[in-house]
Amino acid sequence: MNRTKFFVPILLYFVFAANMLLPAQSIIVENNTAERDVTTEVKNRSIVKTIVENSSLSDLETIAKFPVSSDFNKANNTKTNFFHSFSNTTFPFFLLDFERTNVSLKQKNDISATYSSSKDETTINIHLISSTTANEGRLRNHYRNSLQKIKQNNAFSENLSSQFLKFEGNNYICNGVECFSQNENSENLLLQTYECGSWMLDIEMESKKLPIDSLDLVVKNIVNYINPSRLTGVKPLNLKPNIDFETEALKDIETVGAMVASALKKADWASSNVDKKERASGFPDIYLNMHVEALEEYLKILSKKNSRSKNQENVQFFNELKLINEAGFLKEYIF
Image (cartoon, rainbow, N blue to C red; front, side):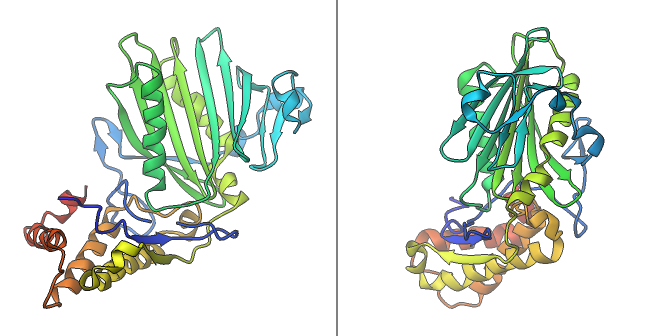
């Protein structure tokens, strides 16, 4: 049974100031209050780790030691602090104890910077990826793609430990995902991904010497320096949601109304339960209750119709979903 098939045709999106778009599905955390997650301890680690913006960690002293330049030709040949004008971000020649060894520009606006320390045998990669679409599911999909690239390039394929992140900035709140791993050679990996309005931020650290706790401390400093809240402010999302359809969705007349009602329920739930400072950074699809209420609305609307659908797969989906809901396992099904 394909859970996502029936919601993929509905495009639930926000728009940027430049009319960039946003469709559907999720990383999920259950919440009981309007604007906060329930933090549940699992194996001595919480589902959600909150990082609060700390101005004392955002102004690194090493920036003042070198001239600032936006000339990419000088970024890899001279000791300069490279200023990336599109994201309004300076990549210092030294970041803490790590020296910048490479800067690369990808496509028009994207940038990657590599830092390394031979003493600690540690490498840091920072990626800023401009996002022309802000789909529901963007955070989950971007994180999976970033993790897959790491797996393909090294031995960090097992013993992955993930959790959700919430960066609470002064102006915006940004959701993220974090992954820790250690390979068979006792080398450590840390990956953090954040959704920041029109930008996605990846920070990857690999080390042969530093333990996970040390990597975590370094990344905390770097995250506060790059500042996901500040990045969101470069081009935040318009808070008004929109719904669009793929052509295939319109062919199933019986289910269209239920799908529209389900999508509207998600939009209404997000507007009522999630702080606008969080919605400006990305569609807040990590909340379990939003998906529960959307599916319940889908069932309610379709249950009133004499004909569920001419498509037997859709009929089967409805019947199975109805049984799951009546048995009280809708949350488990979504999760």
